[in-house]
Image: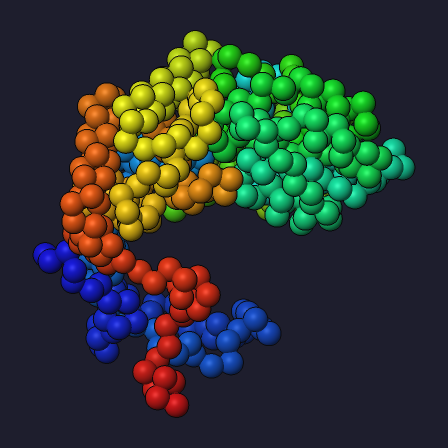
Length: 490
C-alpha cells in the first residue's frame, strides 16, 4: 500500500444498501421507541449516516492505526510528556472480569475488592510523595491542577483571607496558568535566574498579602531541579501562601525525594506519565491529587473511608469543593497504575528514576557537541536544546519533521518558551542504549543534511502518511466536521 493513499472518512465510503449486521425476524411485539423515550426521542431520522459492512469499518480503523507512531514501536522522545512503555501485564489485569464489568452504582458491599484497590493506591501515592491524603477522582493532569487550586482556594476562604494572585515561574508547564485562572485567580510570572531555577530574590520581592500560592513544576520544564525549593516553600508559608507542586515530572524523583518533605501543600500526579498507564488517545487519563492534612476537608466528594470493617464512600462532606468527575475517577486506569507500583516496589520505582535520569544525560552527553544546551545546568530526566548553531536557514521545526523520516516521533519543540527554538527530549527509562544510539545517529544525520542539502529538510517529512501541514491554518481555521456535498454546494 502506498504510504500516501488518502484514507477517506467513513462518510465518504458510504455504499447504500450495505449493512454491518443482519438481524433475525422480529419475534416479539413491535414497540415504537418514541413510546419509551418520550421527549428525548428524535423527531426525524439522523441524516447521512454511512452504510457500510463490518469489514469496511474494521479495515478503516486498522489502516488508521498503522498510520500512527506509538511507544510500542520505538523511542517517543516528547519532553515533559513522559511517553513510557505500557506493560502488557497491566493491560491484562485491567481486563479481569471482576474489574472490567463492575458498575459505580453497585453497593459498596459488592465492590470491596475494587475499593480496597483504590485505597491501596491512595496510600501508595501518599507514601511516594510524602503527603497525607489523596483523591483519585480527577481524570487528567490539568483537572488535577484545577482540583488542587480549588483546595487552596477553599482553605484560604475558610480562613477569611482568599487572596487573588498565583505566582507561576516562566519554566512551569503551560497548563499551570490556565488552571489557576480557571480556578478564579489572576496569574503573575516569576522569572528564572541564569541557572534555570526560580529567582529567589525576585520571589521575595513579589511575595505579599495578595499572593495565594505558587505553582511549581519540579523538576521544571528545563529538566532542572529547583535547588532552592526549601527556601521557596518557606517564603510562601511565611507570607501566608500555599505551595502547589506540579507532579507531572515525578518520574525524575521517585525514591529520591518527597515533595511533602520540602513543605509542598498539594500536588497532582499524572498516572499516564510516571506510572505508565496509557497516555492520550490510548485511554482515559488520571490525575490524582495528594495533599497535606489541612486541605483534607475540602477534597472532592465522596471520600473513601473505613467503616464497619470495610470500605465505603463518605458523601457527608460539608466543606468539600464538590465533584470534579463523574463517579470516582477512571477506575481501570487506577488498576494499571497500582499494578505498575506493586510490580516494581519501592526499589524498582527508585531504579526507574535512576534509569530515566541516566538515559536523558546519556543523550545530552552524546548530542551536546551537535546541539546547544538551553540552560547550562545539571539536568535530570529530560534535556532541552536550543536552535542556536543550527545550519543556516534550518529551523527547529525542520529538524523535528525530518526525524519522522528516520522513524522517530519528533521531540517537543518550541517549549519551554524561555529557550529559543527549544527541542525538549525525554527518553524515559523504557529504552535501551541501542535505541538511544539510533536516535543520536538520526539527529546527527539530519544536521548533516541541513548543512549539505537544507531544502531536503524544508520539505520534510517525505516518507509519511502526511506531508508538512499548514499548522497555522490548522490551528486558526480547523475543519472539525464533515459536511455533506449537497450542503457544501448550497
